[in-house]
Length: 116
Length: 114
Image (cartoon, rainbow over all chains, first blue to last red; front, side):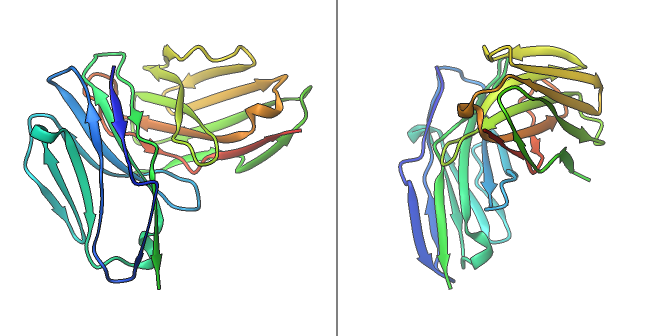
């Protein structure tokens, strides 16, 4: 069975600080996909990134970066120079490659508060 | 355009009412999803449609009845709900099933059952 653990329930940082959100996953499959979603107070989940298990390259998109390490089963997310608009709940999720029956398993989420 | 729309935004209904939630996407996606999200919890999958056919039903009570009239529309019909069904209902769509494509979510319908 697949599982995603986000051990950080809540994080608060002062604006412009860097912050890293941790994500640890468990799966028996060799082919799987990892995701990060942002859920601002408005409620809509916003897709941030999708990464497959064969692509371990780190990714940077503006102030966002992701560190995928298969050796430790982690897919951590870093926000550089945080801004108030980054305040949200962030979900890490995992999907095993199970054609026609793939499902997203979400972590419990990390509530990030950026203090102005 | 990565927009999924949902109506209504808010819904209050009694336990004997019948209501429907609507979801629409125009991205050409062939998979559509319903999720239920309780406060401070992650979304829970309810149903998945692929090419307008029900693909996954996560043992959801029959008082929730999904419908996919065409590839762009997804409905969730509600009948005889319980107060514990109060939650945020999220619709999502993706290119299809088979490659774990990213899902795009709508803003949700906040449902209160009285």
